[in-house]
Amino acid sequence: MERKAEVKTFFEKTDIYFNFDYNIKIRTETVAELLGEAHYNNVLDMPCGNGYISLKNSDQFNQLSLVDFSENMIGLAKEIAAKENAQNVSFTCGDIFDTKFENEAFDLIISLGILAHIDDVDKFLTYIQSKVKKGGRIIIQNTNSDHFYSTLIRLYLGVRKLFGKDKYKLNKVPASTVESSFKKAGFTCEKVFRYNQSFIGFSKLFSNDKKYSLTRKWFGYVGKNKNASLGSDYTYLFKKD
Ligand SMILES: C[S@@+](CC[C@H](N)C(=O)[O-])C[C@H]1O[C@@H](n2cnc3c(N)ncnc32)[C@H](O)[C@@H]1O
Image 1 (cartoon, helix red, strand yellow):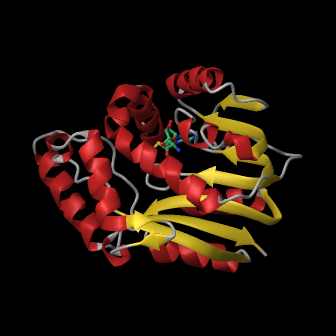
Image 2: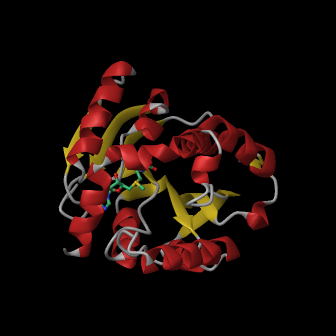
């Protein structure tokens, strides 16, 4: 199967992804902390997954566009939007690069959990950088492939692969690739929050509540990021100068 089709097949099984749901809570709160009190007019969340992260923060947005190529994820996003009574939300089920917002630029783009999965990382970064207005912001997450914690996870996944238990290969994206791409495109990094997701394979040892409280205990919050150098997972707030 072509890699992109494998990625889609994986994310159509939404229950597997949401086994990590404490991490959705951390991401939702991280986005809220990065936004602070600011309000944004036109906001894009791409890829949105089940949309929870941006829908929970949508009081601060006038319009929110949600994009993902998984039909099941978009189905969940519609349910969550209805439950949250979110206003002015639009949904697009389609590939990131086929979804052309030709005449549209955004005040804020939220893009979490995509760089390890997308076919062409540079093309994706250039695309979102071009779709944000001058003075606008991008919140983007990346798992730094150069970090020791990522090396440990790759070793573990390598062993799993020997037993035939693996999905497609995740992209290796160093933090330096993301940071230099945004710098070159004329963005300033305003904030970054770093933490670790629970170790794949051991994640079932603890409940989601426990994993959440341990993460907060170890890494704190955006305003007070403890042990940041131990965190392989970076969530950045970039501003287009
Ligand atoms: C790790 S999840 C992240 C979802 C959400 N942003 C979050 O942080 O929970 C990755 C999402 O990217 C979507 N995705 C991956 N490649 C895509 C593509 N080429 N076009 C559109 N969506 C894509 C998947 O369907 C999946 O919902």
